[in-house]
Length: 163
Image 1: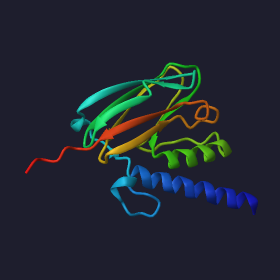
Image 2: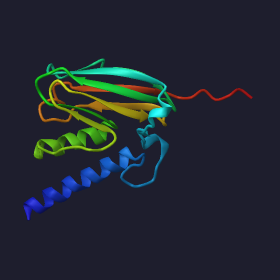
Image 3: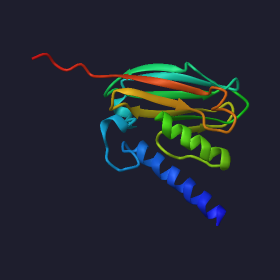
């Protein structure tokens, strides 16, 4: 029974993360403040941001600034000897997902807001930032997130046209 409850909690966490990646929160409402954006289209990319993941448990750079509505191509290189992830999400969702990863460290990800890379590999993610505010970045492998493998993307609000 204990394992069934753990599995149900894990599945609920996964479902809530999938909802966030699709631009909604666990309640299924789609409030703008709760979204982190959506998978972008390559033909709409406005610029490319290169990110390096290191075994020092850091993203280089760890902070980014984008504009609301901008579509970014992230070119992410794992320069270390350990497997790393580049995961976009809200702070509460990343914290919850990290707790699930500690219980299920071999969990693999294949969502649009997650990029998992073996040592020495490079990958790409295209993301459209549709809502102003903060989007967080993390490596959720156990032992990576706590020491500081985190980052933040500040999404500046579109300026409204003067009347």
